[in-house]
Image (cartoon, rainbow, N blue to C red; front, side, top):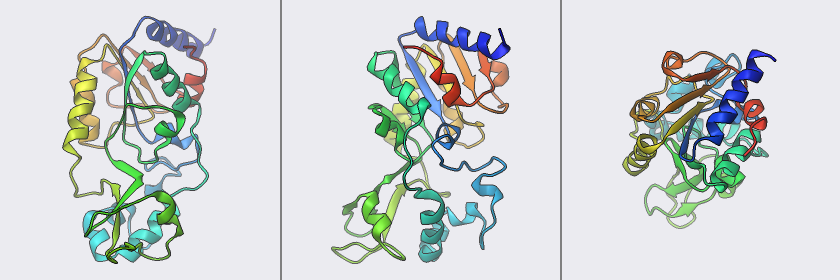
Length: 244
C-alpha cells in the first residue's frame, strides 16, 4: 500500500468519525475545473500583461482604468463553460449527509453552489453577483459576459462592479464573522487547494480549536507542521476516493 493510500485511509476514518467538519479552500480546488490559479507555474501571476495582475485587480486600477480592468477580467476571470469537479461534488455530498457544516472559500467562481453546497462563505466575493456603483441594481454574470467594453447599468448608465474583493478592499464583515464562527466550532478542519499565503483570509484557519486539522495540497504550506494529516496530492483525486 502506498503512502498516499495510507493517508487516504486515515482521512476516510477521520471523516467517518466526525460530524462537524468545515472545509477551507483556495484556488487549487477549482484548477481541476479549468480555472487558472494565481501562483503556480502557469498561474495568472506568471503570465505577462501590459500591467501586473496584482495592479489590475486593485481598487485603484479599477477606478482609473475600468476598460483595461474588464479586458483582463473577461479574459482570465470570467472563464466560460466551467463545471464543478470531484472535490466540489464530494463536499456537497458531505453537507447533504450532515457531516460538513460549512465551506469557507477564497474562490469567486460559484462552483461550490453549482455542485449543491448551501452553506458557503465566499471570503473574496463572487463573479455571479454584480451591482451598479450608483443605483446598486443587481446584474448576473450572463449580463456581464454579454457586454462589450465597460459594463454599464441599463437603468442609470453608471459602471457595474463585480462583487469581488479587489486589492485595497476589505473583506465583508458578516462573511468573515460567519467563517470564523464555523471554523471555531468545527471538530475537524480540512484545508485544501491553498498555499495559505493570502491574508487576511489565510489567518482565519488560526481560529480552529478542534481535534483534527487536515491539509490537502499539491505543495507544502506553512501550516504543514501543525496538521494532524498532510496529503500532497490533487484535492479532486483525494476526495474522489472518500466515501460518504
